[in-house]
Amino acid sequence: MYSAQYIQSSIKSLATKIQSASDISEIIPSLMDDIKELINCETLTLFSLDRAKRQLISRNFISENVPELQIDISAKTTAGYVAMMGKSILINDAYSKQELSTYHADIGFGSCRDSIINFKTNSLIVVPLPYNKKLVGVMEFINKKNQG
Image (cartoon, rainbow, N blue to C red):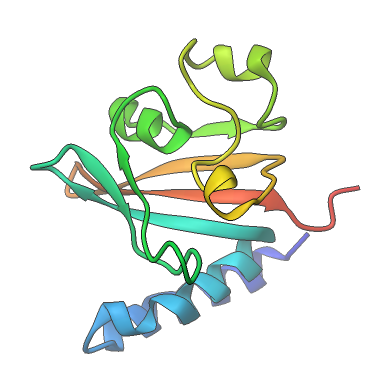
């Protein structure tokens, strides 16, 4: 567990990196690494909102074969559900139908990246990303590191 001072310093460092960037897309890979370290997760997915298509589009590297994910805003995925509801969710067992159904009966197992890149999601924290009270994206934090 990190100290409050470490977390505050890390957040300030992230904010400085973002504010000083001339092109935010160029710093996304290093931002993702910094956030993974701070949150202590195995991997994460950053989605931006495409309002016209009612979809979430991944903004960080997934794999060579899948440069981006496009998922509908619906209750079929955890990220889509969070975008639809605007509320964070915490899932301890991403393959437990019982746990997933506490949020919605239609949510699918794991993360949307599991079947695409042969990945196994164990746990998830999925949060909406608002700006000026409007949803601009969603972030999935996948698998807590050093879970024992």
